[in-house]
Image 1: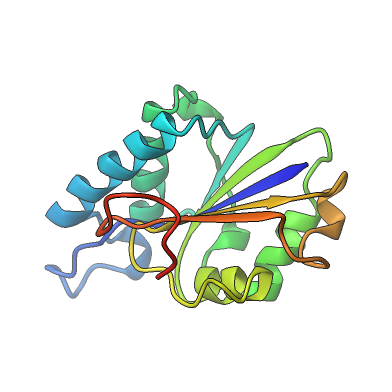
Image 2 (image 1 turned 90 degrees about the vertical axis):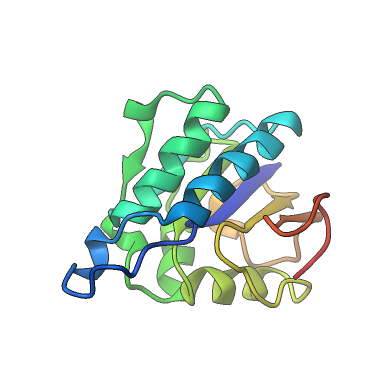
Length: 168
């Protein structure tokens, strides 16, 4: 079984239009939503073997907040340029290249590529709002087969809904 956790970064700030996209921080809503979502994951026993984050500041901040709630060492978060300003197929290549010893992997990144990938993995998922988390469980022994078959289970957590499982 392989579990893929896709996390769209929490809401970011647009207050400084001169700031490069990579450097945009979380805004107040993002700072509220990320810990709330992290607590829900912890409560449900989500425990990734690896957290990969886009190098963008807002994604890294989201990854750190989630890691803290899951007792995942902040220094163990890996930044991957392959998660920033790419397409769904690029993300799938990153996933398919993962070490098969890993059972559960979390990717923290951006739209539209995360929504495109989530929809490609399961037609149930049509859109990932900010700070939404989609968890895909695959009956697979290798990451190289992820995306070739439908997932065995899909769970979607959104900041606006009180319970997981509803698809946006």
